[in-house]
Length: 403
Ligand code: GCO
Ligand code: MG
Image (cartoon, rainbow, N blue to C red; front, side, top):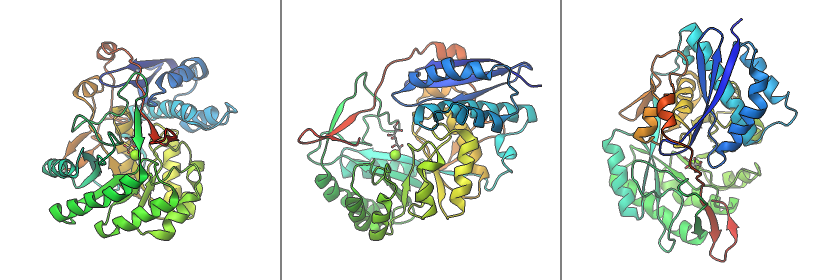
């Protein structure tokens, strides 16, 4: 039997924090899984070390489905980001092992390629519409076919999606949460001008996307979707918080702008109604926060029944390990839509050597066995954990709002 013999959790900060699970077998083959939960990293590390690893030692490394059910049903306490991220890490590592034993990249185990490349979108942003427009030009020069555009709002000193460093966007930038101030009125008045400017300058051949980051009410989101219709967005993301899945019905009644949501979803139950009632067009759940490849494939199959396509979250806080797993998934499934790709810093890429590569707006998973990503443990040791938080968001009168 291919037995799980040893497991370790590696916490490293090559420019930002990452948590990685490494599972080793009695036959020497090992697999790794991403366990990073931005701003709550050590909670997942503890969950793995104290509660999961003791149950894994001695188990059959080939029993991926049974191990998933064991960790999900068996713990009694289901769901939630910490639990599902920990389960995802185990699942990713076990699929990695299976691929290595079979000597096949994971997409082959998922049925082979449905396409030969994965379209990605990059993040253009600036403090002003002019700056963002310039940045969109930079991404076009790099070969991108799809670009997310965010801009600063006049009268607000900072907002989501506008970074200091252009090609690398890192929101978790402080050892205690920084505070942003938000105004829905200012935002709604300004954003249509950005997309008008972008279409005037670059035409309609490029896909444009926008992330609202959960800040509107359903009726405000309906209004924004309607205002943006002339600019034909690829999607409008996280227009409202999806705590209440019914919110999307109201948005749908007012706009045909395509809707995407789900980067913070952890299970199929978080999006069951959104998908079944066709209230969204793209589901953003990804491998590390939605229970691993085993569960994400279940979400995608369910979504396919209702014409919902995937658009996996791919911000910098999802490690290259998650990206490698996501790309093997993206290239294999029938209802792939798009993959987010926020570039990692060079020091992150060094700690995580990977088989995937970017070329002219597409990512290719490569043909290494498993998910094709490894961790250099010696290099990882050079970058100790540093506490870092995402910002919080308040209205001008001090009320807490969604960040
Ligand atoms: C996105 C996301 C990110 C998140 C980040 C939080 O669409 O890429 O909204 O920017 O804010 O991943 O950890
Ligand atoms: Mg987002």
